[in-house]
Amino acid sequence: MGLMYMSICPKCANFKMGGVCSYCNVEMIDTQTVFEDWLHEESPSKREEIVQHYIDTLIKDTYDPKAREYREANPKSVWAGYVPTTSITCPNCSSENVQKIGTGERAASVALFGLFSKKINKSYKCRSCGYTW
Image 1 (cartoon, helix red, strand yellow):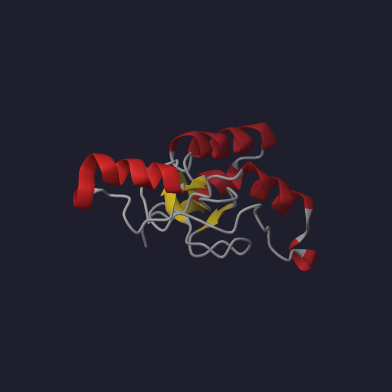
Image 2: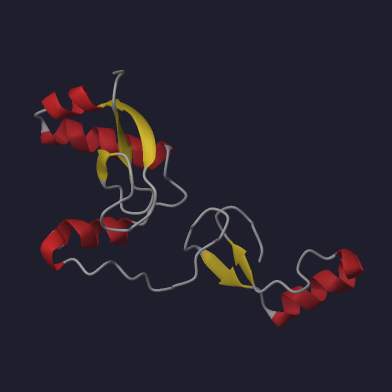
């Protein structure tokens, strides 16, 4: 059996072995941290440094610090799930940093691009990746 790697939740930064985050119920993302190395790391500051590295590099566009704060403040036995202020997430990157496309913005796009406008029949735009739907 080869090396086993730790995974990180793209939303709350839960750091554990792969699968699905038991808090956010989203697919975990594999990291380059070997399970054995993590298991033997006793320094809490070093562990936090490793997690912060992946927050800054791997999940920076989807990470929600409030979700992590909620997860850390509430034991799993009473955890009902973090509910963000907006329930709308980008279908492309899962970011909650979305905005509603206003009528004026849509009309201006149609006026400039006509039927080739990318905003016809679109209601939201992701501020993280630019996807519209």
